Length: 393
Picture 1 (cartoon, rainbow, N blue to C red):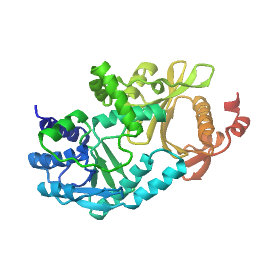
Picture 2 (picture 1 turned 180 degrees about the horizontal axis):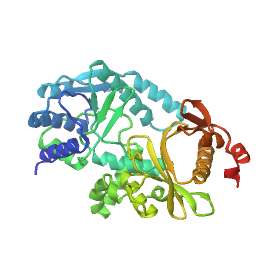
Picture 3 (picture 1 turned 30 degrees about the horizontal axis):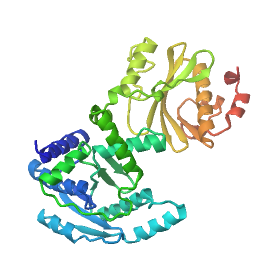
Picture 4 (picture 1 turned 180 degrees about the vertical axis):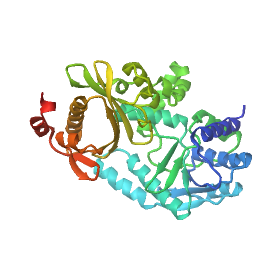
């Protein structure tokens, strides 16, 4: 099968899975002249034609000030696709990177700073031209490499997302090549005679990413199935199983603990299994199962039975409990102190807020009324423990 057909099918799948492209979208497509961005530009023009989606494609390239930069050949290719190339002025970037390189005493230009500056320039252009989306040519192989980079150098399991809304800019970043393997892009470039141009970046071939790319190439030679498995892994939510899924924080030594529930399915399973109470029981009926961004769900256990449940939103150092239910006030008070103490240790100074109409018991555990039905606590947990009989006993 021709590489172009595979790419178009992959874009269609990504579009369906992540809702990337919609009618009336104005899309700023970032071009570097390299194989990935040139293939993306070509593929998007065909995808628009075959799907009939009413999207506007606006290719743009940044003149970063690198010696030898020439946008004319790229502009000529864009013209052959009935598109106009927008050349954005970023000549100061190279100067800034060179200064930072000297300050940091590094052998190469700082890629992270360059990446941020390029995104800022493109975002500004997108806003000026009323584009609602910005598209980059990051592909599946890039995503796997980013995962390994974050694991090795950042101690975190993370890669970039197929789609990301930037609320400050009111622009959506999309990556239509998220399911496309780099080898397919190379094939497409040859089969379709798509021109490729040098970015003239002094760092080409001398980055941490290149080291990871070389390492992965070696792994794929030894373990051929790894390449496909790594790609599948990024979408394999059902099989994800890491330490944090098993965190149980002790409240005291009497089998009293709490834990965060990460998915709604897990939430329901926990209720069914540990409480032996149907989800329709009054304790949990109408309890929030919202899984929106920032919403966290906690369950509290005592002797393997669920005794409390709550929803919480974290915003910087402020923790707002939006909903809660409990069987016994004493258990809830003891939990609240333990939970606040754990938060205080990690985020001091911090603030915990509860929305409630129940004034008396909140005052008792040192939550002070801030406004109507809003109570907060910022006090040192040590002082709370000394004052409160229920917690101290």
